[in-house]
Image 1 (cartoon, rainbow, N blue to C red):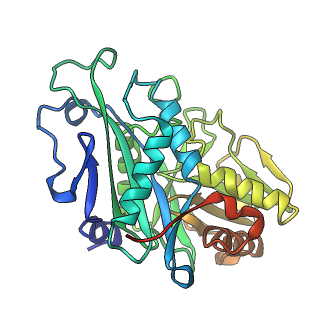
Image 2 (tube, rainbow, N blue to C red):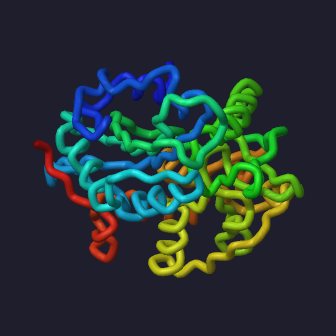
Length: 316
């Protein structure tokens, strides 16, 4: 059984559902729910890191995640009574009451809760729910991943926008990731319809070439990741790297010096080969390792300049 499947069985004590905190196992929707039938939900993935020496969790960039979820609600005509501040408070309370003294993955989700027929989004009632689970490393972040360019293409922004983390759009990610794993790879890389690189199946991508850190731009049908933005800032301000946002061609993945994924789930995950071609000698490179070390120091609250990125939550 995969780590992800194991983690799904180790949930926090409470979920937020129908405006109240209830036992997680009781938070259920009807089979007639619009979101279940049409994939009309928006979610965020947020990590809370357990810092044993401080006896508390640090939620990484909680306000930024909540702001993105709140903004994306306009894409699906979603209106809920909870304010962004209240949404953040709900996430903190779930962590506080979780009973988990390890890493936590938070998932706030706004969904079309109405039991109605028809693939419309306007005028359909929406609600907020949220839960948390125990989660460690989602992918191998040490040895490096063997990845493949997927035969599936990344959805275009004017079809189903990737910038909005909609539940229905993750069929695209599931098909690419499943294809890669069935072929013996760890992960997939999406191309866009024009043949340029978009991102991983559910994570952003960076490559190192000629000493520069290069990533695909927001216009490349990607999720504009919170972790992505964090890595870019840390690379520039803390490591003095030049960061470039530009289109990336497929074959650049084969000849670059280093390659890595980043995201809430992936964190900073090195890539050691693409389509069975070694990247950087088949092992994580120095820039990737440097960013990875810095990133984990930041999320664990060890870098004073970025302590404000961490929301402190002590257990109940």
